[in-house]
Image (cartoon, rainbow, N blue to C red; front, side):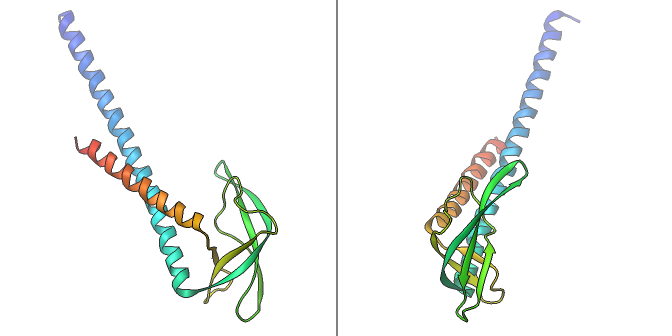
Length: 151
């Protein structure tokens, strides 16, 4: 074999490896975008469910619980609230942030589920922004991934 032929074969193999690597990265981007999009949509649907089937009341952040999950940490607010029947609950939120966006003693609004009054979401503008950002980033990433994947 001639040296030119060997070099051309080597360059073609490098291009194939590079293309496969790019396809893998695009695939990972597609999966990540779908995941972020799904999280945003699920949070949106959850909030709509609580707004339709729940009751909005005031609550007080009684504690902040720091938890580690999968190498990340988040502060989960523990909220004291009373139902319309004046039954008092003290429950940990299912949504945490780092750093914490709440302080102990802070008054907030929550929406609790009428069927299971221990389940609630915190009702604030930040939740809506997080949903919007997740859905937007997911859609943009999905579009970019699909455009690059199909070309």
